[in-house]
Length: 584
Image (cartoon, rainbow, N blue to C red; front, side, top):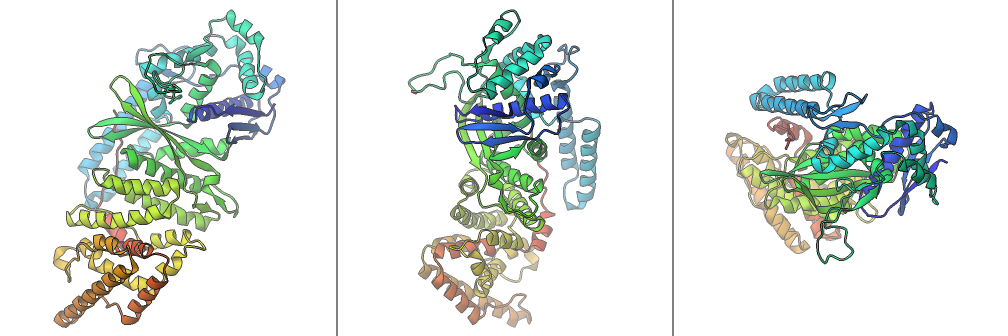
């Protein structure tokens, strides 16, 4: 038997966790019976998840499998007696270490502010990281088992763990039961029912909402005609696999809402993935996660997941889309109600379909693009009007909709100038990374490279830049020209028609050239070049031939409010990038 299936029933991540848990179990079986070189492949087959092993699971393998915990026990409290367990998660100690690390980083951040303390700050941060890597190793599963340790979840967890632990002598029979359950479509085993009658064994447990987000009390009714307090029950095999899958592949993150914290649960779903690659990928992904606000956390996690897949993939020159590996993230929003949490949203955030990877150079291009966009989105405060811009960006990422990104760029130009005018540092896009991004987004129908490389377009975008964002980053005493406020907003409004956009650009360039000439007469040096007539004519020709004035306007907003990579890096030294996720 080498093929196993888990049918999709709920439309949530419940069955996905079950599949990951089964893959964990199969891997442990092969490792314990000296078949550790066995390949395990997990596939999404639309109606079900399929797990295929390169070596079959035979009766001989099952009979020679000795006891191991299907998932590690959790020491819930400091005075919990765990002497009978050879290995376990020490939640009280891990929680203490995590708080220690956060407090140390927080003090470093407060005590060593500013670019003049940058080297010392980085040295101390690296020292803290070394201490907690070598001496106080934080479990990568801590975010998950901290939730399992809650009173609402721990009871069923302990029952399922004790099912196997107190009946170790029958372990091979339990494992065989699980393997038959997923590997035999006509599974019926009356012998097992007879066996557990004589044992201390729980066949059904409450379906915990952490692993079954659609099965809380009062939910899961075919018709929403009222609530009730009835619990939903699930078979022990399914819940065991879900717990194992949650510990290996679930992500639980705090979400800041006002002055309180809710929680978002994420589970990555793959199109087709090798078990060992997945097991290596997720810990690397979780290393760089930070708590955040509701919309930003979706965006940043998808960008980081895409980046992590690229960084750890090798396809020997074969072109492949990231979406052919990982489909996206299941997302569940849990509202904190004090003692309990309530599921208020169940969703799925897709990985962009346009990210293609192949060789080392192409991979690095996408890594650069994703890093910059993570930094930019990460520095937007999700508050008030900014939610509209963040929603545009999330729709772009999850829906692979370039129009949403172009609308976001209009919004971001306005946001950037507003923030800078209020002396709030905000990161600009870099021209070089924008070039890479738009070239990657080229299609036969939408030839963006022809636009952004056009001489007239570059001249007009440069004039906008030198009249707005470049001056805003320049100290007041060093400015040679007045800042042209309101350009971003006007550009957005005038981009609705070619005539209005042409008229606005004509007036803008006329004033820009006259200011440049006046400064040259006054000081003998203008510090910027005029837009020549031939360049302006090139721009008008480009605009006439363009499919849409909105496209040209959005690209002008992209480049007119961007900086060179060198300038962006200089300005970044002024910004404190350290973010510390907060413990509830």
